[in-house]
Amino acid sequence: MEPVMICAIFSHPDDESFGVAGSVAFYQARGVRSALICTTRGAAGMCNGLAETPAELAAVRSEEFACAARTMGAAAYELLDFADGAGQNWDCSDLGARLEGLLARWRPPVVITFDKDGVTRHPDHIAVHSVVSGLIAAHGPELGVRRLFYQVVTCPEEASPEGPSLACVPPETVDVSVDIRPFEPVKRAALACHRTQAADTAHLLDQPAGSLRAEHYQLAWSADGWRPCAGAADLLVDLVSWPGERAVHE
Image (cartoon, rainbow, N blue to C red; front, side):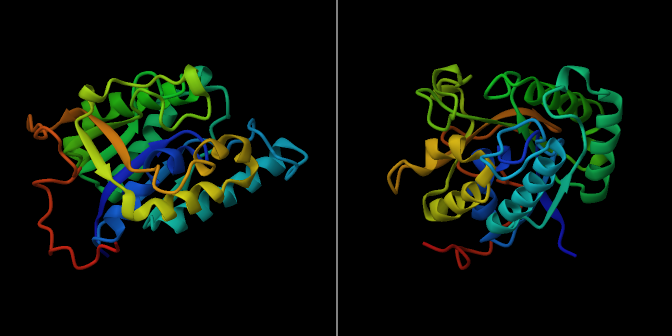
C-alpha cells in the first residue's frame, strides 16, 4: 500500500471541505495519498430538516463526511466520537491517544490542523488545535511526522460562514498557499455533500465560479528546522520527488 503523506485533523464533518478539499484533490491528482480525521460526528449542528434527533443527525453527518472524503479523493478517513460542542470538556489524554494511534498507523510526514483560534473560535476547534499541537511537539518524529501546518483563512474573510467573526490571518503570515483553481469543482462538490449544513456552505457555493482559488497554511513545527521559501505553493516540497505534471487535470 502506498504511504499516506498528509493527514488533516479537524473537529466537525464539513471542516475538512471548507479547509483542505482542494489541497487533498490537488495531491491526489499527483498520486499522493491523504487521510482525514474528524473528532466528532456533528450531532449538535444544524440539520436542515434531514434528521429529527442528535443520533440521527450524527449518522447523517457521518455519511456526509464519507461523501466529502470520497469526492476529494482521500485515501483514508476516520470519525471519532467525542461530544460535539463540548471541546472544553473532552478527555484530552484520550483524544491524544486515539490520534497517536492513527498517526502511528499512517505515519504521515505532514499533518494539518487548526490554528490557535480554530478559524471560527469554536471550542472544539481550539481543543483539536491544542491536542494535535502538543502531540506533534512531543512525539512527531517517532510518529514519522516531519511538519505540522495550521490551516488558515486570510483577511478579508474568504471562507467563513460566520462572516466578521472569523479569526482570519494577514496574508503576509501565510507560509504556503496551494493553488486549487483546477480543483474548484471538487471543492464545491465536497461542500455540497454536507446537505445538513447548507446554510453555512452557501457562503462559498453561492460565490461565482473561479472565486475559490487557494487554500492557505502556516508552518507551525518542523522536525529539522525546515522553512518554506517565500510564496511557497507545496506542502510537500523536499519530501517527495514529483514525476512531472502528468496527472494534473486542468
